[in-house]
Structures are given as C-alpha cells and as structure tokens.
Length: 494
Image (cartoon, rainbow, N blue to C red; front, side, top):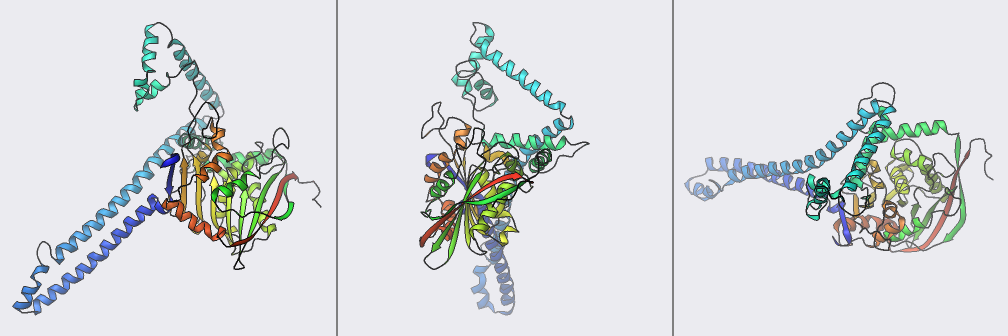
C-alpha cells in the first residue's frame, strides 16, 4: 500500500476472510443436506412412478445427478474447512514456536540465579570484541582482510540467506557502523525471554509459564511497590470546562493527546499528569465523549507522576495501576453516564490505559467504550470486547508496540495499521532517525493523516467511530484533569 502503510485485522483482515470461508463451507454443507433429501425423494418417486415418469427423472441420475452433486458438495465443504484450519494453524504455530524458544532460553538463564547476568554481560562483551576486531582487520592487507572485505561486499551482504546476514555485519564504513533499529518483531522475542528470566529468578524451580511477560511484569511491579513508600492518587480539575473544537478525524484525536504532554516542569520529568475528557452534545439531545491520554512522562518507579515506569510495568502485567485510576476518576468527575458512547485515544502508555478500561468487565458497566484509537502502544494483551472497535497505529521501526511480546490479534473489531517509516541519518519531516523518533506522537499524527480511507478495515472502524464523532455535534466542551501521587500521610487537597 502507498506511504508504507499495511493494514491487518478488522473487516478486511484474515479473520474476516476465514469467516467468509466458514460461511462458504456452511452453505455447501446445507446444499449437501438439501441434495440428500432430494435423492431420497427421487428414490421414493421412482419406485411409485411408471415408465414415463422414470424417463423424465433420468437426468437426475448418473455422474451429474443428485447423488453425485450431494457427494461433491460434502467434499467441497470439508476441503474449505481444511483450508481454513490450515491457515489458522500455520499462523499460530510459527508465532508460538518463536515465543517458546525465547521463553525457554530466558527460563534456563533465570534458574541459574542473578549470576547469570554476569554470564550474559560477559558473553556480550566477548561477541562485541570479536566483531569489532573483525571489522578492524577487514581493512588490513592480509588474507583475513580480503575474506572479510568479500563478506561485506554488496553481492554477499545483499543476499537473503545466512551468509548475507553474516556479510551485513561487515558492510558499511567505519569500525562501528550505524546499528539497525530494533523493530517490533525483535522486541517480541526479547521481551518474552526477559519475562521468563524474571519469573525463573524466584526461589526454587519455576516451570516456564505460558504467559511469561505479564507474570514477570507483576513480579517487577510488586518489588517496586514494596521498596517504595505508600502513596495515594490525587485527581483534580486543572482548568474550568471550556468550549473546544470537536475532533473529526483520527489525526484530530491524536493532536488532542499531543497537547496534554507536560513539558518543562523539571529536568527529570513532570510531577503531574494531564488527561482530557471532551463532551460532545449532538443535535438530537444525546451526548458522547472523547477521552485523550498521553504516554509515559516520567521514567521513575512510583514518583509523583502516575504516567511513569511503574504504571507501564503494571499495565503490561495484571496489577492495578495509578494511570488507569487517574483516567477512570477523571471520566467520573466529568460526568460520563452509563450508556453514553465514549471514544478513547492514547499514545504509548495512554493507549494501554484505554485498552485496560475497554477490556475491564466491571468498568464496562459504567462506561460504554464504543471505540479506541492507540498510537505506539503494546495492545496485544488486552481482550477488547467485540462491542468496542479498535484502531491500533504502529510504526515498523517503533519497538514499543512489541513490549506485549505478541502480535495484535486479527479480529473483526480490531484493525492494526503499520507504517514503515523511511530511515535517514538526518532528521526531517519525512524520515526517522532512531527508535525514539519513530515513537513520537508527532510521527503518529502524520500516520493518522495518511490512513487509507478506501481500505475495508479502516472504513469499518470509522463506521463505529461515527457513533461518537457523528456529524451532528452542536457543541464540544473539554474538561482537563491533573493527577499526581502524594505520600499516604499528606493532607487531602482543598
């Protein structure tokens, strides 16, 4: 697709196509049943009819008759179902095997205890030293240098096999070349191994869990909570409710998210987080809501800002987190009522918060989350219900969406859009220089502007999105809330 965009899931995804295969198989099966009944009726009629009727019924017999058609319909139905199963099993098996290898390796290292970290670091130093030494010898007038230069030549480095992979380590100029970006696929494997490693560090033998990433995250979050002091979350209105412009597109939604990032508060990060809740009043007297949530703003664990590393780890795992609590309390204070449709938009950690709220069966009794838009968020671990349409925007060079260690599910109500950003050594409006640049909210706003409106999956999401953003909005009012942690003993705000 143009602009480096690939769309999966949703109304045009593999699941939708498999559903069509199942519908075809069902229709063929129903046809076989009907033909079987016709064969039985033909038999009864032939036994009771005279020679003239038997002659008239003759075309329904033989190789192209009713019985043969019934057999063909049953065989075709079975073959269609076999093809459907083959597609499903192939996709699931390849991904599962990759995760199993990484999980087992991490578990083996973790069972050796903390000393295994020294082994890993030592091995990394040895490998890096050998690689740098080889790149140095590559430029020497020796037989070894000639072999290494041959490996790094375009003809070898451009191959797709193992020799090409080795050759690319010797290509480019300089002793230390520009290292490749860590993409989502690599991140999924690394995070799976890390989750299994942390889980295996517990005393005694720990079997490899099926879901090592959330379990490992829960252990890390629990340790951080135990070592930090007791805190409580304070959520207050930051500004009085004010008139605002209603969003019309996904890019508009992400611009609202971008405007919530707190900058310049202090050197190591802002001490408070902001979220916005926008009320949309429609011409028919109904209301809908747009909730915007920014991403991680502070990389400490348990500092004043709830949009921090601790909430990140808790969101990857299963423990309650302050970032979600902030947004839920802001939604309640803004006055969202049960049954009023809500669209949640979030970047990075903000998208994870939206996924947790949308997939929580208790919160669904209070908030009708009709749609979710996420940008650069790891969303695979959230079981978003079919009543919520989801659009996940990702960049191929952004490793953050891979932190869930799983690809996003291919479901009818979930659409994933991946954009492959052009890379360049120089920063510019159309190029990405590093992983942080690929993860920036500004890049995702541009990606949202490039969404293909003629794509079946994107169009399907927009149909659900229109339930909130519909064209009949007569007034938009924005409430902005601030959230921050304080020590448990601190007095309540006035």
